[in-house]
Length: 404
Image (cartoon, helix red, strand yellow):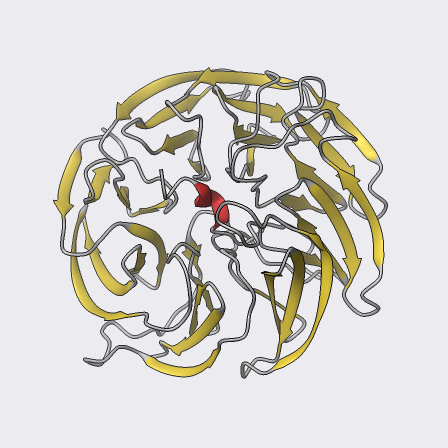
C-alpha cells in the first residue's frame, strides 16, 4: 500500500492549445510518454549523463516540472501551503507564489502538475480546489471547489489529476454522481457542460483527449469503469467495467489508430479496446494481467508496449496487436518510463535512472546511474525538453544534459 498514494503524483499536466499558446502536456506533447526530441545520446558516461544543475530547496511534492515562457514552474508543499516555484532555465529560484492549501497528511506533497496556457496557470490541489492564476501578477483569476461546487468527494490520498486543457476549455473529473466530469471555460471558470457519466469516484488518474471518427473524445478511468464522453457536450459514448481491489487507477490510457489501451496495477493489468468508426462502442481485443504498473505508465513504440509490473516487479515488452508478452526483465526495479529518439528512459522506485534500447518488444539496459539527491519517494515522471532531462525527487529538481 505504500505506493498507492502516489499515484498519480507523478505528474505533468496536459494542455492542447493553439500553436500561439505555451503548453506542456502530461507525459509529453501527445500525452503518451513520447517526447519529440532528436540527436540525443545513445549511451551515457559511466557515472551517468552530465548534471547541469540541481535545485534542492523545493517543498514536498511528486509532480513534474512545466517549462513555459523560458521559465520552469514546479508545484510543491511547504507546511500545509502549496506553492508554485518559478526557476530560471539554469536552475536559479526567481520567485514563488501560493496556489492554496494542499495535501499534508498521508504522503504530504503536491500531487498535480500545473498547466500553463498563455499567461494563465491552472492547478488542482489534493483537497479538490481548482485555481486559475495569472503568472505575471500572481493574482487568482477564479477558482472552483470540485467537492462543494460539483458534488464530488475526496479520496484517501487526496485528489490527484493531471487535467486536460484544449483551446478555451479545461476538463476535470470531480467524481460526483451528477457532476462526474465537467468542462469549464478556462478564462472564467463557467460551466460549459457537466456529465454524470457513470457517477463513480475519481481514482488518482489522468484522463486522455483524442480525435476519432471526426469527433474529440474524452476518456477517464474512474473507480469502477472506464468512461468516454463526447468532448463537445459531455454525452456518454461508452463505458467499460474495470476495477481493482483498491479502485486506484493512476495510468493515462494510450490511444493508437482506433484502439485504446487502459491499464492499472495490483495484478489487474490492462485491456486493449477496439473502437467502432463512430467512437460510441468498444469491444475488447485482448487482456494482459502481467503488465500492471501502479504509477509508472507505459509507452507504445513500434508496435510494442513497454512498462513495468507492480505485482511481479518486472519490466515487460508486450505485442500491441496480440497482447503477448515478448520479453521480461528484472535488470532494474519498477518505475516510470518515457520515450525519445528511439530510446526508453526509466526512473525506478529505487532511484535508478536508466537508458534502455527497445528492439521489437525486447529491450536492454544500455546505461544507468542513481539519483541520490532529493527526498522521499522516486515517483515523479521524467520530462525532456531541448535535450535536457529533468528529474524531480521531492525537494530536488535536477537537469541532465543528454544531447548527443
